[in-house]
Amino acid sequence: MNKPIAHGATLLDALLAALTRYVILPTPEAANAVVLWIAATHAQPAWAHAPRMVIRGPEKRCGKSRLLDVVEATCHEPFITVNSSSAAVYRSISDDPPTMLVDEADTIFGPKADGNEDLRGLLNAGHQRNRPAKRYDANTHRVESIPTFAMAALAGIGAMPDTIEDRAVVIRMRRRAPGEPVAPYRHKRDRPALRQLAEDLRAWLRPDLAALEQAEPAMPVEDRAADTWEPLIAVADHAGGHWPDRARAAVLALTAEADDNGQTSARVRLLADCRTAFGTDPALPTATLLERLKADPEAPWADYGPTGLTAMKLGVILREYEIRSANIRFTDGTQAKGYQRADFLDAWARYCPTPAPPDAPPHAEIPLFEGGSRPSRPSLVIAGQRGTASDRGTA
Image (tube, rainbow, N blue to C red; front, side, top):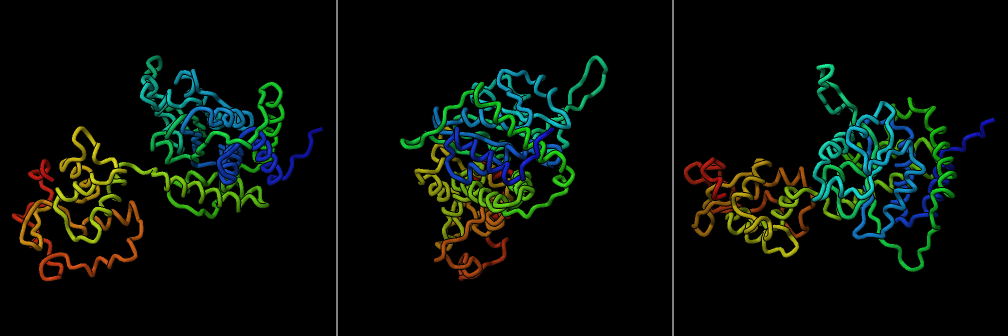
């Protein structure tokens, strides 16, 4: 006779206790996130997105592999991709996919990752449903669609590519300090009890796949972060008890941590640094903007290429945001190629909406040019040249 399955919150509590027996997590929120991620693997057919979990540390011996051991023992159908061919990995994914686990992920994403393009493509595409890989079968003379959707946990030293971490629950491990003991993990001795916990999680969640698929939990974040965390929040709400509150606290803590650790592209970093460089200046010559950008010793612009960030590179990046240089007449009577602060406002609001300093006056009150008023745009441009092909080398 099968024993009754414990209430969901009790199961998650048991998983948390098992996890923290063998691994020191950096924060309680990180531990709760790992628990919910593991539980979510048992209901993958219900999810529209397959969140990744990135387990990273600055050095060796930070507990990354040990955490992956516990994940392997408690997740749904673990599939270790180390030393697995891309063809084997692709053929292992079905409508009810396994959980992909990658240790030493630098073998896939690092500088010595030649030959792993197919696996990188799978890990990038498999976050969302209906993103199959296409292969031509010479035997049948037909194009074959191969599913890629599967949850994946990746462990390694240092940051993963933005395409992975932007779709991931990121756990930043660190070495144990004195006074932080953990129980030793022995595969043969300890794994059977953890696999039983995995079976209990499956028995709890599998009968409710339809309800989980229809769930629309209230999310404390938006956009891609909401896509990534929604399965975890849905599991927490399904469990009840203290888990809904714990889950949302974990979302806020880990997404804020990602923002604080600068998980933004170089392009968005440049936008934010341009805002700092402008201050309250209404316009800047390109040379002055570059000088201010490269003067920040903690910014990458002084070493951005052999000679640092150039006017042409700056122009190429900013044009992606519809920001173009112009020939501008400044209040001191000089004229030079430069940028107007007003042209950055929309991009700043969309991509890096950090509030302006409290002592900065509203932009509408800043007198931009001569006479203390904002003249029409054509009067600011010499010969009508704004962002034309002729300024690409001198932006």
